[in-house]
Amino acid sequence: MENKEAIIQATIELIEENGEHLEEITVREICKRAGVGLGLVNYHFGNKNKLIEQCVEHMINGTVERFQNIRQKTDRLTSFEKLEYLGNMTLDFLFEHYAISKISVLTDMQTPKDNDNTNRTYTAYLPLVAACRPDLDESSIRRKTFCLITVMQQMFLRYDTVSKLMDIDLTKKENRKAWHTQILHDILEV
Image 1 (cartoon, rainbow, N blue to C red):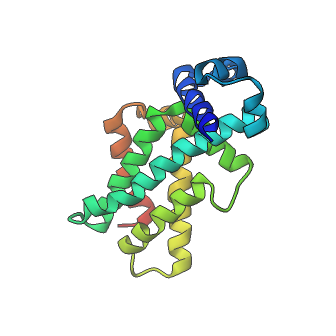
Image 2 (cartoon, rainbow, N blue to C red):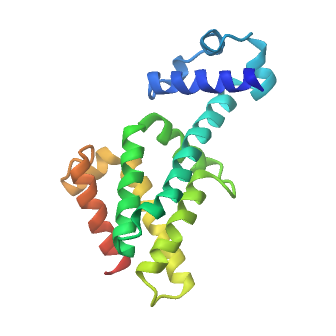
Image 3 (cartoon, one colour):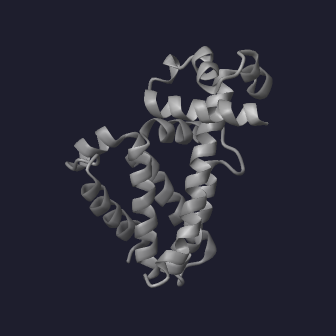
């Protein structure tokens, strides 16, 4: 198990260093950094792509868990402020870890799983959306939550196009925050 963790850690470091250029990461480079033999990548993960996918999921899982634990820190906030806070954290993470986040979102879209990162994010947001709109039925809450997550993913994946369409630079944190707040008002109708 020690070798497997070393491979994962080395791969995560290389993903962060290479950004979107994951094709430049080689198994040889991963193994050299991890201090393991070449065959161990295939033994533990099957191939480089599966290893990278698992590393991205590992990184995002840690972030989603942190988001779920943040609820304790936001007890003084209203439901809307909590949702706003969580959304801003999510968007900041997406933009600050662009390559990893892009892989995660696109993987979830291409091969959806019951407990993928998109579904876990949806699950984390659902009670906050419900708390913002206690007057709505469960079906409406689910649709609004789905719309919110979808808009955030598109805002991230297509930030250049969205920035041009909306005449706002979404690479700037303060602009994302303002736009996200407006989206929350639009979707939740509050």
